[in-house]
Image (tube, rainbow, N blue to C red; front, top):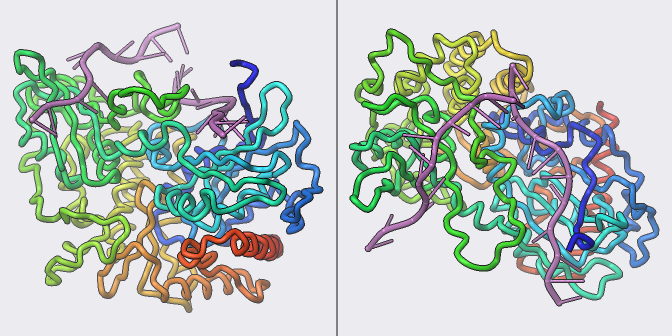
Length: 542
DNA sequence: CGACGGGACGC
DNA sequence: CGACGGGACGC
């Protein structure tokens, strides 16, 4: 079967590594509307040479099929709806110097699709616009035959969220035919992807106290989200094996728990801190497994030890096990039925204390209580640690989940955080830079005249949501006001862009409904032109 | 017809 | 080249 192996070249552009992209996207949870001026990254290395609307005529005359041509490309989003706001740090992030922990956890929620019936002559630029209509493209990889180097007629398209991927599947699978192809494309999850994504809301926990009850465990994890289930692994004698699983209602919560507790929380009577990581997929359970390396490269590996600040057994640590004095916070803070798609998340909650009850992310109550609610050990680590790799970024991450209306407060805490973590190593500092500088500044501050009650935020997994600082409403869909606001911002930043085409890329919904090849092709064609226009506008503005 | 990457820790 | 405890999915 070796002859059939495929390969694809890695991009020479270090900045285009998915990790680098992710570090930008995940670190930019703060309003992303005003970041267009950083998007120059996109065409920095890639001009439009292969990009041409005529690619969609049946002849595909461009020459992108030379075997050695780079066909691998990671995208920085540059349309506003796409997520992954570019804060411009991508190109500066060295491919090698990066921590795998945190970012990869975020990456884990990216959704990779496998697309076949792609013309062998198609370039990334032919493929991307088609898919970009449905969401933020993190990566496109054209598969090639390992030996000949020729394209094999399929590709991976990676979206930053599952939602986007689903949209693309619904709209494009068997619905779109590339010019020159006899059959429509198939668009489906790459092998193992579904399984991988399905369990991101569940964490494995090691170093549980063997006497711990479900309830006790639930209380420890509840501050980070709605705990739907706690399972303690037991032997045949019903004795706890000291590990278990905690399932949340949302993968974001799982991530929050990982960030906060892994290596940071030592249970009473234990001498080792928790291991908290995404659960491995359950049993292979039969067929449908292809050379499934789905979990390599993220933090699922057996010895992927997170660069957590491990508690060294300090003399003064007799407190171990008594951390989290009154730990657990009322579960009522969490909506029991979070809806990824729906209307306002917490619509059914009492409006009286909006700042608490209607937070976009209920897992964390409010910034002022955030520190005090952190497990004591974590706080200690933050304070004492000169090499708090994990803790500080974690804090930052959590901050992003917090009430956006508390900007000043947040900023204060931010500066504390970055101050403490100063004495750390370079790579991290970089990551932090993108974290702590850009996102903290609200769009409103950058563009003085423009204001919008809505702001855009990103969950750790890439989901975007919108928060209104006046009504305290949050919602998943982009409010019209915010879309307009975004456009205004962009006009201001790029005065050279006359007719800004940045509205939500294309009418996605009508797209899905129509789902007619002709239309799709037409719109794709149009999209090409738009892209070109946008690109030239962007270059002009840099 | 189906076809499913490559590199990836950090000192 | 050391890092890792090993345990991994109910009803």
